[in-house]
Image 1 (cartoon, rainbow, N blue to C red):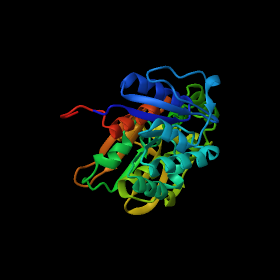
Image 2 (tube, rainbow, N blue to C red):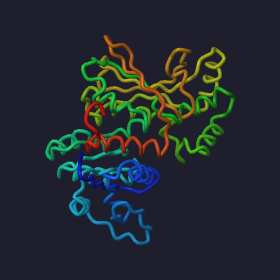
Image 3 (spheres, one colour):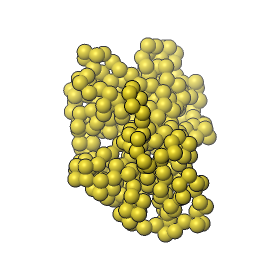
Amino acid sequence: MALGVPLVLSWFGPVGQAFVDSALGQDPLLQVAAIRGHSAEVFPAPGSAVPERASWAPIRTIEETLARTNAAVLVQALPSTPGAHARALHEALAALRSGVDVVTATKSHVLSHWRDLEQAAAEGNSRIRISGATGAALPAADMARIGLRGMGCNAVRACPNGTSTFILDKLSAGIGLEDAVLEAQRRGIAEADPSADLSGKDAATKVRLIAGLLWNWDVSGIAVETEPIDASTCARALAAAQQGRRLRAVARASLNRPMVVTVQLEAAAPGDPFFSIAGPEKAMVFSCPEAGDITVQGGRSSPKGAALAMLKDVFNLAGLSRPGFH
């Protein structure tokens, strides 16, 4: 077993805070050696609580922080926003090139610079894991990356956006779109700006990443075709419910249409895995001609779910396991 695994966490929002709480409670060998905020950073003592932000020091360059901590893994919990994009990319490239593994829940730089990150990892003989960016606690990335090797998977269909599923269920019960969105926000399911969920962009993003893992597609070049959830969707959701079905925003990718991801509103029938998911739950179906359909389902969206997905990636990279079947 390793003597210790020093981690550098970039960003201390809800996901980052949940990650620290989870990491400190899971394994004493994990050391959150540094936490980088917007303009300040801190180096917590091993096993101690995170100091108050007022005591943090001005942020150093990522290279200095990685060197000072002798980091094994950079954990990124930065928001996937335009303002954080350049930082997320620079930090990931610097870590990978210096031989530090990267675990990220941030999507923006992975979408825009898939091949650049891949090349940086090759230069540094390092690894990058993206479970937190592909569906929070849903283990879809692991399925795509290693679980389906040799299975000949040729297509994937998914409901990877829990917010859209929650809202569509509310519409099918006769609740208007605006009220459904407000309820999702009140419960902490939807972001303050739900446009990526309603447009299908978030679902497409997650399936783009999965396709990159499955088939080595260059994620940054994948075309996207989406059908949004809007005011006209209310009638379709009600009609589906009257027919004993449930309207779902279904994202698809297939080897039959290389480098294309689509998101369409479809009425799922009983027996379809997408029919049974509820609220913010997600599901993904991998089609394998000989092995049959393989489904992963559940994994509600939350800061805790994303944090646990990142923690799982850290464990797998760091080899914190016992001999034998474990």
